[in-house]
Image (cartoon, rainbow over all chains, first blue to last red; front, side, top):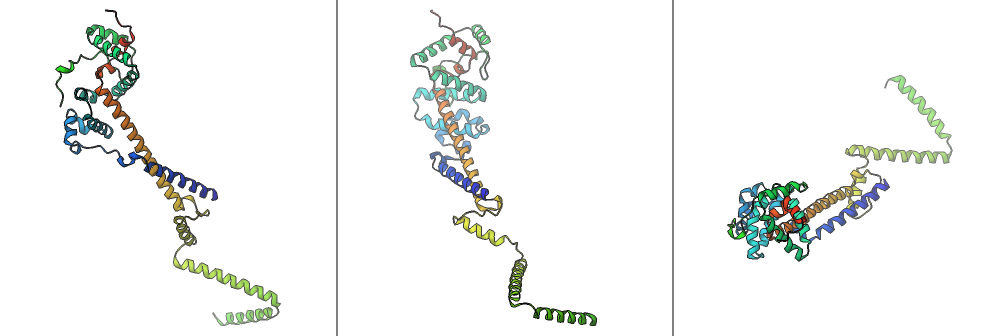
Length: 167
Length: 144
């Protein structure tokens, strides 16, 4: 019984310390994660996220909050970046979770490259885009299968200037 | 009680009176003290039973007050009966919930940051998904 009392004292101390620690975190005020409805978004956020409007209500809380965060960053982006976000938003949202995770991992690998290597990757992408569908398929067939990767190669996208922003 | 019983009681009483008259003063005093103690104990039990409570109740109330006042928890009660245990449990649950929410928020911030970088990247999404391009990157660039 005396041991019980000591355990209780220890648990009380640990729990109160943990609660105090969490209360001091700056993010504590933003909890909990509640999924915003489309109607909860500001007019600016709705305008930026318009390509996602049809599927907004089917997204889970984390995805909605993520997109809202991106919409809030939108005003600080350059016009080129804003255009790219508008072009890629819907295709990105339509990927499977595995594809998104796979793309994130590859992006992180490429992000670590020095600037000259990044330029080289961009040039190689342009070269790759100009390959024939047969050459792309041959490459995809030779590539080791990885979860989230696509094969055969997807159709080419039109250059950014020819694509209408999906507002 | 019939006549025979009364007669029997009177005879027992006379024997007892006769016996008690012969008890030494020191022994009589100790017997008196023991009787008083037994009566006091009996009176206490009767009071407790009369109020419909159980013997541990006053102890519980006292310990509860001492808990919130900062006193030591009673070691003679099970863990679940101590308010401190419930406070600790509640605080732990709150802390765990807070930690889970904080972790979820951290993860959300990380994904938001990463996704906004991917979306603004000058490489299209397909470049990160295309298996053929991943292999193409590993082949040496052509000279032409």
